[in-house]
Image (tube, rainbow, N blue to C red; front, side):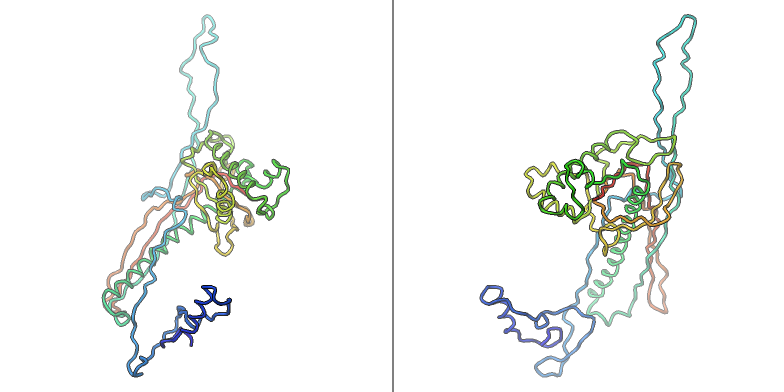
Amino acid sequence: MPANNLTVNQISTVLNSIVSQATGQAQITPTNGAEFITVAQTGLQAGYENLMGAVSQVLSRTIFANRPYTRKFKGLEADSIRYGNHVRKINYIDGTWQDNGYLPIEDGTAVDQQKPIKPKVLQTNYYGQDDYEVQWTLFRDQLFTAFQSPDELGSFITGQVQNISDRVEQKHEALARAILCNLITGIHTIGNTNQIVHLLTEYNAATGLKLTATTVFNPDNFPAFMRWVYAKIASVSAMLTERSVIYHQNVTGKEIPRHTPTMYQRCYLYAPTRYQTAANVLSTTYHDNYLDMPVTETVNFWQSISSPDKINMTPVYMDKTGDLKSPEAPVVISNLFGIITDVETAGYTICNNRSTSAPYNGRGEYQNFWMKFTDRYWNDFTENAVIFLLD
């Protein structure tokens, strides 16, 4: 007798079988889950009680599937702004050093202390904002018959509002993923060798091995490789703290010196590889604190949950002239291990989030509400960032 109906089932036979298998008193045998497991379904059944067969069974409980969702990539959120539609960043360019003017000094000459040297700066600009909204409707009386009490109806409405909140959280998360993917594919397109680390290529060159993206996961290869990878990321992290012009895009003739202290670094690592590291490397490392990273977020998927290790995007980026460019074809990356960035390299700014409502509709007996968003999503290719590829 299937369990997914409104009858009361006797399951002593299947229960005894399950217990016997669980305790080792019997060998494993096929078990039919439909005999005792109630599975959620959309079809609504109604029946009579089993004693007299005359009084209908009643709804005993309503479960509200209401669970708050917290967005990933929250670290990409920057401070909010409200006014204006143009954000500028003033970047300072290093000048050249000069000989000290106090030597030599010739008889009958003067040292001119009034010669000016103008500061060299480069202004980069962010334009525009993105608008969208989400709407929901609250009904006054139409749902009374669906619930047993005001409390139950209140729980339903609470769940409805929580669903809106969850959608907002996921919206921020999804767009944050896109921000990171645009940065990664943009760096890949620019092709600055200092910003792209080919982990397997460098490891094979250092060790004389010939590992591939497949053989590197062999238990004999993986622990040593991942210790080397963590050392490599740590060395890149240390290099980013140095003031240099090699870990970001520069404008021709106006190279911007940048440095990223560790506290301003953010590291994003692909989850399966990181979990493999935790299970097969950290678990056998006595002092695993030596494999610590900067502030790190584990990324379950980069762009699509159905293709977690793949990015397929046509990025927009700034070239050496300071103009915006995009490649003619999408950039496809399927071997990304991670990325380490400055906090100012990528992010989103909540400019003006607000809620509003329409007047109550007396004839239809409902009221409409909206949550509206004006946000800015940005990449700054003149800030430090390095991607790590498993190739």
